[in-house]
Image (cartoon, rainbow, N blue to C red; front, side, top):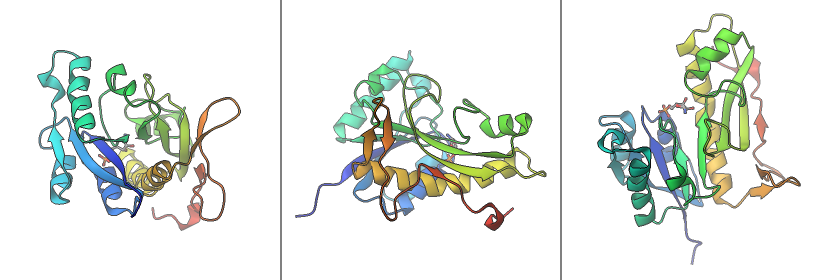
Length: 222
Ligand code: GRF
């Protein structure tokens, strides 16, 4: 008998391109078992529907508090026996209601090399700061804004002609490569603790995911 799959829920608010990348990748032993979206008409919902993945629309504005919204999400996560919660462009801060039920089991992807440029418009922040390298970060989620332990980062160059849209596209391409690899590694049980008790992805051996991926910049498309 084959090993049971690790059940992942993806929470998204927007276009869902990271969701799409996760749905197209070989995530085994993970599988996307549920998609939750808080915005009616969001691309993420359409993508889940088109892929035949169970999906729920839970609109935050229908709830009197963040906790009540999170409670509704939690009920769905428990009902579907979810193991890992994967945030992919989910524009809400989760409260303890979900985080305490999934300790070190909630991950997010952010379009910058954290701790630089947390919060919204990370790409515009990078352009304003004039950095020449930015990228994306996958991290465990804690109660702060993009502050949880970093699991993997991919570097992306900033080009002189970049505007926010061009830089966002280049970063997104790398997000779509990085996120599925991390989710697969997490599901395979590669989350470990370093000597200070800090979580990291144990990435030894051939074919392992590097915690910092620096694609060959000269091979990048504009
Ligand atoms: C991505 O840039 C992700 O890093 C950020 O929100 C964006 C979501 O894009 N958290 P998409 O909905 O996956 O296309």
